[in-house]
Image 1 (cartoon, one colour):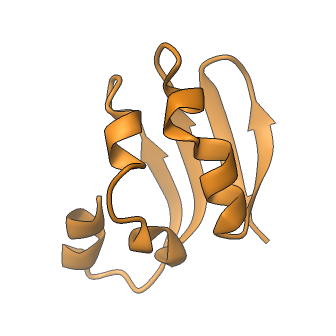
Image 2: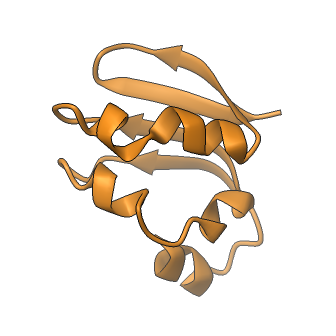
Length: 79
């Protein structure tokens, strides 16, 4: 994700939709600097990847609030 965001022409990403079919854990175990350029995340989790990736604590640490969630999809927004 860091490489994709770095190669984009955007200074800021307003909405980042993530649906990577189970690779959520690997994404949140790598470089997370790209989160500083994102305003909101809409992510679909598969299996137990939300807990395994520590998504909630990571996004909260980066200034996001979880605004909406169900078993499969989460919306996190930076205030």
